[in-house]
Length: 95
Image (cartoon, rainbow, N blue to C red; front, side):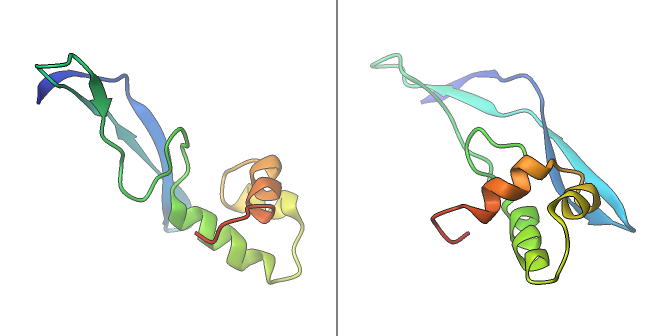
C-alpha cells in the first residue's frame, strides 16, 4: 500500500470555541494497493463517512433536545440546518 494522492479539502464543523463555531479543513489521504490497484481513503476519526459534522456536535444536539427548545434555535446555535436536527432526532443508532 502506497500513498496515491489527496482528496479536495473537506470543511468539518467540529465544536464551539468562545461561542463561535470551529471549522476544520481536512484533506484526506488516498492510498493504493500495488498488487490489485484498489484505492482507499482512510476515514477521519470522530466524523462519519460522507458527513461534514462531527459526532461530538451531533451528541450535543441530542443533549440539547432534552431541553425545551425549537429545532430551528438548536440549528442556529450549532450552525447546522434544522433538517440535520430532525435527522439526528430520528437516528436509529446511538452515537
